[in-house]
Length: 218
Image (cartoon, rainbow, N blue to C red):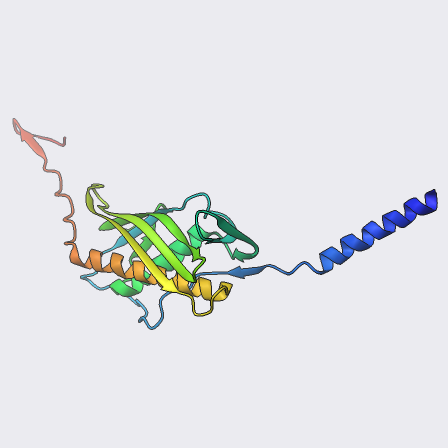
């Protein structure tokens, strides 16, 4: 009886070790910034200073695994193809790099954060879709708001959608490249909008209140 139990344990151990040996390694990916853009280098006197963020993702996308959408409403979550960091951080990093180059300024920062610099605009974004599709496309759909950073006045509200084909269907590297292209398209639209808007005027300094010969600061 003991011999049979020992044989069973050995057989299970062999199966487990064989299964582990055949498990494919995970691959990790990051988004890439736009190609062919000049380095922002410095800050043009006419370029606005901008804070980008926060960027909000739905929970089904805010995960380590790369997500694609099958026909209908079914999601495919790939356990062996993952983001190198988080999708939020990577999206914001590349968005900042793109917009900075498009505006020709280094005065583009992540918000929220400790930005000790006077900002003109702030752009927030709710990412509604950022994934691959069953028919070989990468899609990005975002609702974004441009605000006067000093007063929080809403200057523009937009919802835009972008779609790029994969160079190689069902290839994860091609999917991330196409997703990066949709983020480039989004960055262009944000930069064009910011260039069109007049810079907000800084608030007027408070005037001293002079009454009865005495100086009073309200």
